[in-house]
Length: 305
Image 1 (spheres, rainbow, N blue to C red):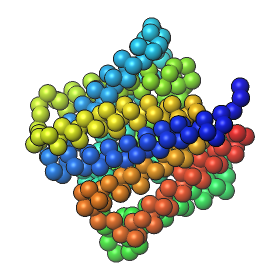
Image 2: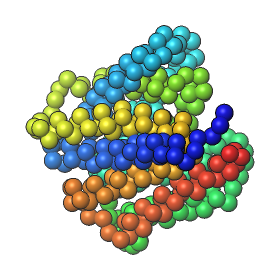
Image 3: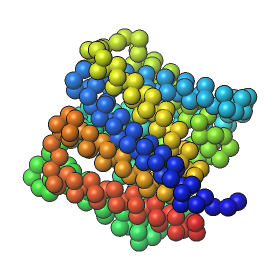
């Protein structure tokens, strides 16, 4: 199959960048809803998953017909999907949104981006193989960037709460699990089906705890706009654009371009919500983003692409 030309790759590049920006702005919208409108993070996560999951499932059924239901026919696959929805989807989204509520969208998004380091550590242990030099460098950069973000370089005090740090790191661990656990399912079923069913199942399960029918917060036009953006653009459109970009430019370049997400979150949080972001914060951000670049390129080289 002939490789796409540079001109043909342009739509893929635009979609990958757009998905990252949509995700980043989604985090800032969540911060706006928590700080300005009094919404509960768990409530928002529940409805985000139920609504976005339902849309993706309908999309999967429309494009794949009966194949969209194949994932439920074997108990082994159904069990994996339930684990993905409950332990993967719920965990990665709730820890991230709760981390935002304790700090801000910029810091929470950047802390979550140390997740790939945990993925590397998992596979190093599983395969009983020491990481390569680039992966060690990525670990050092991630730790350095995190240190600067939470301390501003001072050993005497933290610039964000211990709770925010805890939930931010937990968000990164959840992201690692979310990345690793559904690999087997994604080899057999479409990403739309896996993610759509995972979100829907996770949202319905989480609703037993959150009671989403009990609405809180101040609902006005701004609340509705931010909520709709999170569901439609920050979840459904971003997800579709990213998957489509992977088919055009490949997973390596798509993942690299998605490093724009923390920058989008930081810039919108600074200019829209007035979040204070110092030069040290930007340096920590750059160091953590470099971990994504190093890990993506090292994976690329090892796979021989």
